Image (cartoon, rainbow over all chains, first blue to last red; front, side):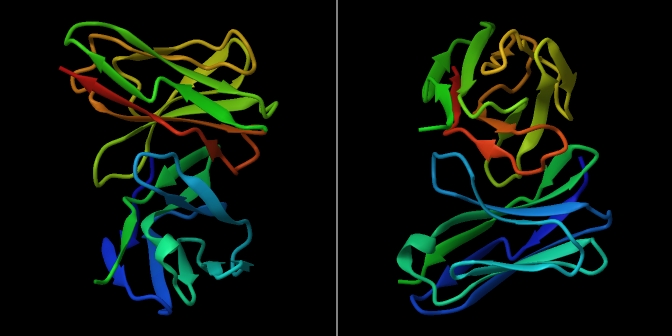
Length: 109
Length: 113
């Protein structure tokens, strides 16, 4: 699979904060997907992006497909405790998905 | 409710034994996938199938085998040839290979003792 660099590796959130994470690659992709995974569970699809430059929202989540087709970002606005988990980006080309290593979001004590 | 089921949730096996993980979907999806997840890493593709009786190797197929005898079922066998089988295994499906949105099951955690 292709290499995806996802950052940050981890972050702490305080309720009400806006948070942002991104994914970059040296390869171009036709589709970008963002998933959230709770511990011990399967990933759940949050947002799918199909066109370069596309900006899509799903509730408090906003994601963009980079113009170069090599990157994508995900923003979470006004974070709440249930936003904790691991967020994965995935890029698709040739019928296969390549995944980033994930961004772990935890609540700041 | 439509969805993907995987069983069992937890599986323990002795080294050298083959073990089969179950994956069933009632979404009427044509394509199904198996991924392996290790701590701190992204998902890696083991095998995928776009239609009954057809499947293709993914990036890390060595030591694994699959079958696709029915549209709704895609079992994965972890053989004794897999050198490091302890991992979290995830099954996914999509409407077809041209449909990029893959939906995942709850996963099976395999521990080899």
